[in-house]
Length: 241
View 1 (cartoon, helix red, strand yellow):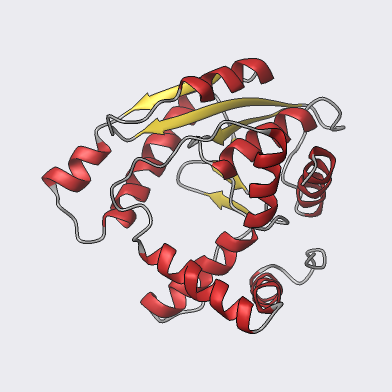
View 2 (cartoon, rainbow, N blue to C red):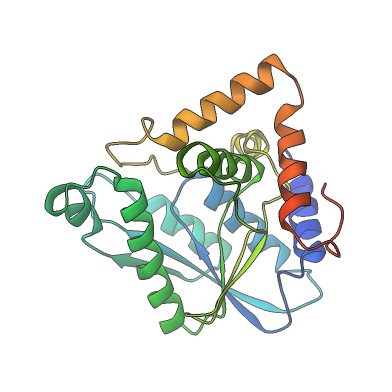
């Protein structure tokens, strides 16, 4: 996928759901993975011509794995002139050594979210941007259905009353394959996930199930995506793309 296509889809999502307002200070949750790197690149380029002025910073929550190298991520932020902050934590030690939790992903996610929110509020941000895309939306619904017994997924825009922050997801009109194509096209640096359970999680299992369904029944992933958004967003929201 070309840069212009990424910018077009990102801007469409931002405009359709009113994700950015004049004067926003937005923190990008930057893991260093392909999704957050694409989001960083898209928002930093969109910033130059979007009619509403907004400021960007990038924040990585370092959970404490020893084998993670963020030097190239820092260099990319520098080249895009986006201030970069790393929050060092001991989340990995707490989750895997102290708690030895049977569901490490859930606890890790909650702790990373807490560390992220504390930092972005300290930095004066009013919004947080995550690199969730179409596949994430469908996978979250399927995980909720299979493991919680309910139909639920996330929204393009979420307001957190307790923290006073707003979460936006500008890549909501892109599939994971689009992101992969863009990263390859631009030859952007991606940090490998150092988590020891990466590739063997419930989300990975669900991803495989959905891909098999889409292979056997072409277009089923897109139909699930449309069904989810049309069911969970307000009727006055724009048509699903």
